[in-house]
Image 1 (cartoon, one colour):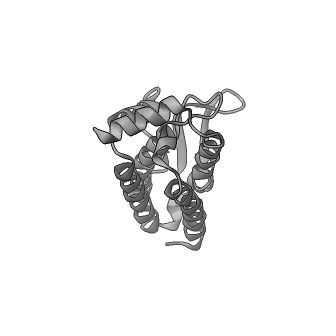
Image 2: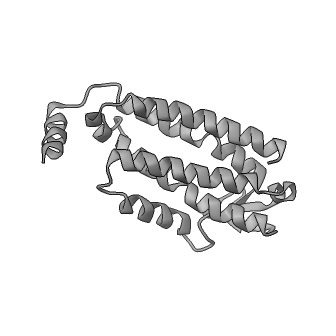
Length: 183
């Protein structure tokens, strides 16, 4: 692993540890909490995080093979969004414990792909279908820039989860969660 990639992995790992610590302390009935104005519950944020690394692994494998331009999620219009939505939908009903295991497995896969990345791959151009630059052109980033942003991604969702759990859940949610757990 190059020193540059090692720093990115360390930053992402630190963010993930903070997120994991928060989830460790989170009572089960809080998983359905939403922050005001947020359409995602705590659970939705975790579902997203459990699926978001998979397209990155594919991109890193492409970059490792020497591609100079890689599309995150594929070049088709809405490909990344479609893949993320399908991944989250597939996790509907999966228990929190299983989501947490998937979260760890997916991150391990990214870290393995990053460890194998040659230094030249960091110059690969990353594109996301539908992302537009300031001049109206398709947006593009060097892989190293994209990875620096990726390393901070967990922090955004951790912050959203903290806002969602700032107030105790309403009693109806608590009762529904308890009823679901008891069978």
